[in-house]
Image (cartoon, rainbow, N blue to C red):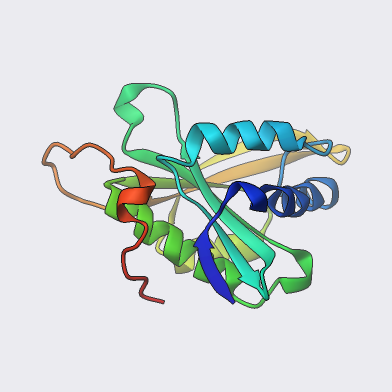
Length: 184
């Protein structure tokens, strides 16, 4: 398996994995397949400052992890939301851990201080993954999403990347730090 930054030509495979999760699990709150156009636009708007990663086997995308802005206000600049999805044929093989390890290293090198991951409840596999990476549960929203004819809760897990009270440095672009050594 190889981990690398996602490229535009990976978006169809990424979308296939995301749409499978949307149509088959409550983990993804989309209720119908999303379009490649919306994902291309999101990739173009975010990937310069928020890394998107893919895991490949023999050049085939088997999973992805990505980051995105947490909120739109400027004070949130040093926070990012993260997510990871693995093709169902590759679940349980620790690919999510490998993808998150690399994603977190890049986000930390860029200067992000706080990462947040939302997890539809229950989802013990995702909770275990996040907690194994050092995330801690910080909130729980009850009955926040309606999907598959029932209400779903969502919890949020947080990972602090820096404890310093010093003013943060500007966030570096992904390209400036993406060649850092990965410690898997």
